[in-house]
Length: 329
Image (cartoon, rainbow, N blue to C red; front, side):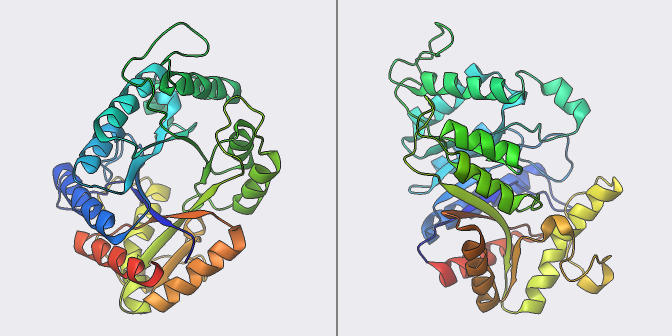
């Protein structure tokens, strides 16, 4: 297929394992993804979670970049309201200085956590205009002069790195921001599918090359999709119950690590699509997954797909990555 595949990793912590175990497994998967031909590997920022070790994305990116050679590594994303933009510029400029032109900076406006934790983390505004100004300053810090557009502050470590910035979103609001800024748009359809089609349409309609932040000649959409590939449809459906249980725990207010797979028939059902938050998915044997990915590309016109695969057993996840690469590349 001409549409490249990428990976979003939240560094899930299975029951009975530690964050150290999860990070080690994530790095082994990064090496595998690098060998298999995936376009990029992104880490998503989350806080105050029991089952995810993806909190310090810059550190995870640095470690993944150090064990890989080709794959692009980045954030999907940095939740900008949790950070001072200058610190983000310095961190990602340092990453680019260390690892070369393989670093991506995906930025979101959501906190990636509950409101209490968000208040403890808050460093910048999530308002659209403030978010846009922060992006413009970040581009200045990544530019040749290493200087913000709105102040005389200089970041020597990020100067000249030109780290590419993506806008993350799941709604027409985020899509409009990405379009007006002339930046690539990563749509979080893997867990927020309700406005997927409208968001992509708004992004393309509002896309402008006239903004001072614009870095593209044409819109570029990367869409998220949940994927689990196994030898049979039944086996894949069973493994997919790991993420289904995680979302049920969120709805019930339970704080548990990732649970082992169960018989899908034992889970509460909301119809053929399962949990509505997870309805953007390709789960099954290779032929099933290939057909569903092709249908998703046809529906969205996405330029790239970013896949999300949760598994209780790291070996199951790596097997899925291998089977997916075999059927797509």
